[in-house]
Length: 249
Image (cartoon, rainbow, N blue to C red; front, side, top):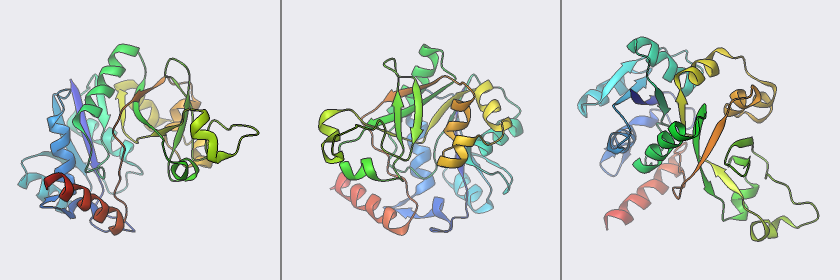
């Protein structure tokens, strides 16, 4: 079985009730769920939440949903809790961010295919950086990888560094890749991630994917054209609405 799990936490400091905000006639969680169910890769898609409000919305759109503890420290932990509560052992589990309402279904399918064909523990999408402001932005996670696509390191800093070259020229003289926070795990890799303690590099960068990488996991990077647009603030939500209105025009 290949399952997509959408972890959805109700509380948000910058945008309370974030999964239920309206985005041009659909809630954010509905848009993410519809993208996931449109992907050909999945046998099952489940919303995993800590809120009865989100449970009610899932039931309204006829999505499968499971209530998990409010104490889960991350979306990845919530995915694992959902798997345990469902009492299933899928071949592949995809952690689908619940705040990516513009997610394209083919990104999910490509990650599942990559996990199956490479023998990796984890597959995760990346997209090319074309703006030097993004390159310098610590909220944009960058990745360096081997020539075969295996992740070497993720950082909030611009990597790789070009010695002796002004950063304004880096995009003209090298390739830079932005990480999109979506993960396809083998069952064992997901379990390992949850069972392992926070790693030193993870603590420094505040990037959970470094936990498995530090412990030697094989994480393959999947090149996609899709650029992530997560919603964390009211301003982010309005940017998404502008894009949706333009698509419908």
